[in-house]
Length: 375
Image 1 (cartoon, rainbow, N blue to C red):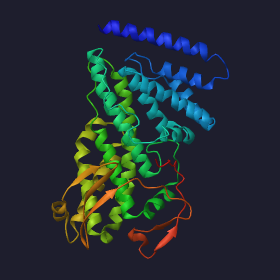
Image 2 (cartoon, one colour; image 1 turned 135 degrees about the vertical axis):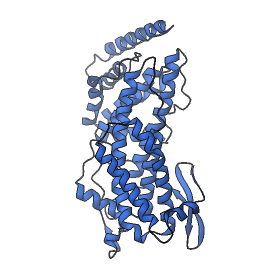
Image 3 (tube, one colour; image 1 turned 180 degrees about the vertical axis):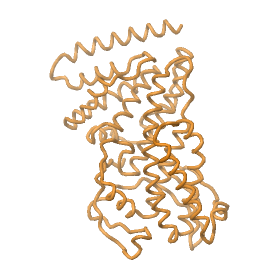
Image 4 (cartoon, rainbow, N blue to C red; image 1 turned 90 degrees about the horizontal axis):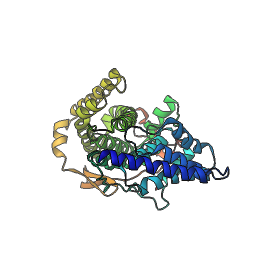
């Protein structure tokens, strides 16, 4: 049965690629050229991940016009949404991940607004099932998880205001730290919560298939591992900022921070096992040491970490944001996290850092990192 399925897949690949090659021989049919590259990168063979040559052709769309970039993204999405094969779907998702990580802004931007109606669930693969063989059934769970993970990655990127782990994002370290220092407590908490949520989703990665498809799984694990390092780096800076602000945090903000720390610590063991060897060990250990330091700082406050932890009524996700219990001077209220708009020129931002406690407001320009459309 498995050999028959593989043979049928090979025949489909040859037929679709031959037809596309014939049509795309017209030098003016750039979109069809992208379509052919997508077909060649997303074969039915579970033992071969997308080739670098085909990925480079698709990423080159970022050097052209907006229409060119849109054609490339459309070709990938059409392939993803019209296939019922788990291998093809996984390879299509790998291409999406490569666009997020290695694509230029114009290509990433087209991905972030696809389709025109927007929406966080546009990959629409939560019900994906391929029952042709035991391997395809097993890989179907990878398709469902990977699509949901990429949705989290794009959602987190919208909240952050730039594509997490993108190699096209460049900013000087001092400017970056100053930008983080300019964020309000509410924005910092929103970003930390989103990053922790991304790591929690990464922890749900399925087991590596035993009967095939290991090369696909290994490529996905490598890409997600790079996101893990980038997410930890972002959390490193933001938790360090909260450590500096510990003496000026409100009780409500402290509760939100404790919730985030608890969720983050629940991922530690699983992340250590999954991404062992990814990132410098001393740097990763330093991050978890910082998490303990922030907990210790909160524990040294008048209310104390344990007392605050017991005061938490609950944390749950509702809709597109995150919601948790918060205490204020006027009693209990619900603190809802929603997507934050990217700061623009002339927007006034309040300093929340203790290092800038004598400054009320200032005007800070948009970050030089790759920004996203807010859907």
